Amino acid sequence: MKNPNTLKKKLASRFLKAMKKLKYKMSPSPPASIAEKKRRHRAVRAAAYASMASAVGPRRAWSRALLRKMKGRKRARRNPGNMNTRFGLNHLCDIVPGGEAMDSCSLLNETAHYIKCLVAQVQIMREILHSSSSSSTIL
Amino acid sequence: MDKDYLMNAGIPPPQPLQFETSMPMPWSSDQSFLNPNSSMDHQFSHFDSSWTSMVSTTTTTADGFALRQLIWKLGGAGASDRPSPLPLLDQINLASLAPPALPSLAADPGFTERAAKFSCFGSRSFNGRTSSQHLQPRSATPGQSMVALPRVASSPSLKLNGSPPPRNRNSGMEMQPERKFGKLPSSGANSNEESSVSEQMPSGETGSKAFNEMNSRKRKSASRGKNKDDRSNSAKEADDDENVKRSKQTEICENEQECNKADENKTNQKPPEPPKDYIHVRARRGQATDSHSLAERVRREKISERMKLLQDLVPGCNKVTGKALMLDEIINYVQSLQRQVEFLSMKLASVNPDLDFNMENLLSKDMYQQSTSLPQQMYPLDSSSPAYYHHHQNVQQQQLPGTNISSVDPLPLDASLGIQMPSVDGFVQNLPQFSAFTEDDLHSIVQMGLIQNSVQNQSSNMKVEL
Image (cartoon, rainbow over all chains, first blue to last red; front, side, top):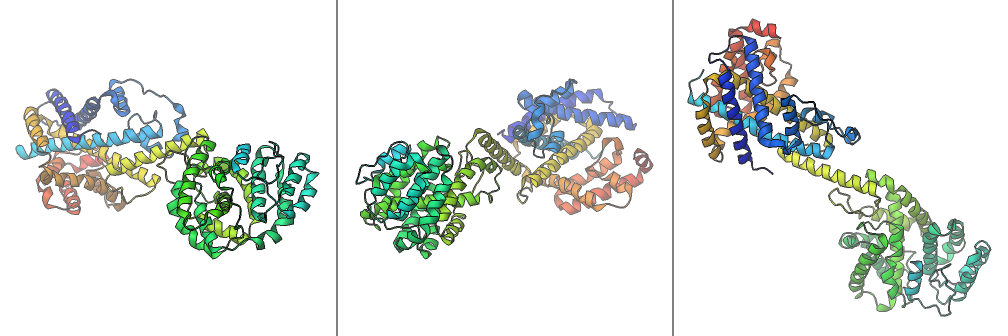
């Protein structure tokens, strides 16, 4: 559906913005403590998922669920009668954000889109790293 | 509808039959029916007048055909009107059918071919598929149910032959009311059959055509009734009620036909049954048309469509067949992608303060614009993603000795393990060399680099983390 290039551009711009914000918060020197590293790591990961979700917008159920998680609201549980129609998608609904409240058909839809976005996000992050490693000196 | 069938059948009884709505039958029985009729009459009082009149109007020797027509009609009508047509029919079958009917049937070899063609009567799509398959086996057994009917006047009955039989069995081509549907393709198929067969058959044998159609239809319903168990379609379970109805007829039909012929037809008709695939939405032959199973079928088809889309997205899913395995692959893939995000975010976190994101912006945008030309550069990195994916699977299987290594393994890394900077450096050092290495080498390099770093630096810390 989505042209991968446009998707990537959107994701990249959002992610870079988020990283910039994070950068200002981080101490410029490499953090010594492990806790600090953990915190940083979690922040970057959150930035990655948040930028992904906001780039996709509220159009997708998984992005809505992610945004809800970011904002700290409770998960919206609707259609509890979906368990009958699951056909073994139980594991999938645990992995895809917002998967519990969906029926099988839309769950598979969401999974497909989620995979696309995940792939694009991973590519972006790798590209950033790659450019940083190639441009700058090896740390 | 029976009335219509009767009226338009065009079989002019030489004597005005007292065909009221009570007994709408194109009846032209012969003398062999006299005895069973007389015995039956007392059972079905309302049959009396029509039966006797029918008996009296016998003019032809087409006992088999008329008999089958009667039986078929009774079977069809009995389901709706009369409580138990079966004893009547059974008596008819046993008493009269077996001995006299069979020898009188003409073993016309061309007849069997025609019958084979008419077995495709009910569905247009069957014509090309099944006719050729039917021809040979059928010709091998000059059917006992074939009768060289000398009657000509049943040609108008051809058009409406389609309507009553599909009433009893699911024609299944569309979801419209079966009567309506039954008329449309039957007339079309009729015209096809007539045009194709006309060269073979003299027009005077149109009556035999009707007969063939009837018998072929009956045989088809017989086979379908048998095939009921063979089908794996779960929606067919809802067909049981209709199959039961049909099986009653099929019992009747089998009684009247030779067992071998019926069996052969069944086995012949099993392969020509349309392959039940999940793409069509319309109700198909032999499937229930109630709303539940239809909705289920639509849902299942949607789901299988989605699964196909996912198959394209997930690399390496082409070999895997079946929903369960596909789902496992998909889950693994999504998990591996999420782990990659974790890992990359960790690296970014460590590298972050040193990155200039404005420059990154420009560089990244350049990269995107060159994304089509980048494959040479990106390919090793992209190939590493399936490398990650498969490597993780390998790692799980390998059970490496020493917990250090498993903790050092980059892919299933948990941030809480606190992988140190040197390990990241080691990994980053290996990055530009990606293109030179295959996937296996990549694994070993990564592992080696990380192990070295962990051994050199603060391995104790990692153990503590564990």
